[in-house]
Length: 106
Image (cartoon, rainbow, N blue to C red; front, side):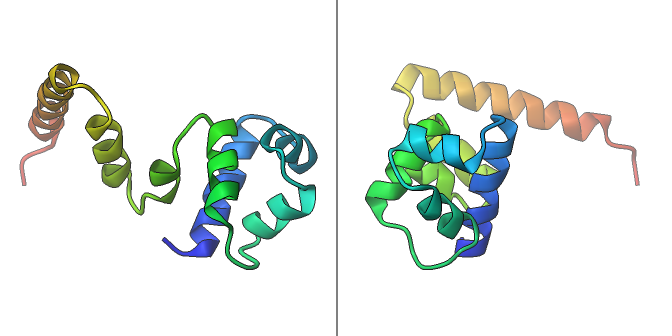
């Protein structure tokens, strides 16, 4: 993931939460300037900063850095206990089969 894409993702999450940069920074325990630099892809954020940002966004750093939605799903499922991982696998497989069956024939 590029710093630009990370910045857009953070900004989009922040907007969905209805937070200003100032309020978001306050909740994360960083400066408003840090959030601005992060969203504008100026410099590279520390892992500590990313962890604080992820906490406010109610996510994790690996999910925040996931390049694609399937990467995010993989991280989420991997964090589950074994039994719940199997349930998630069955549910995702059923969803995939449902979507494929609903697609028009070529």
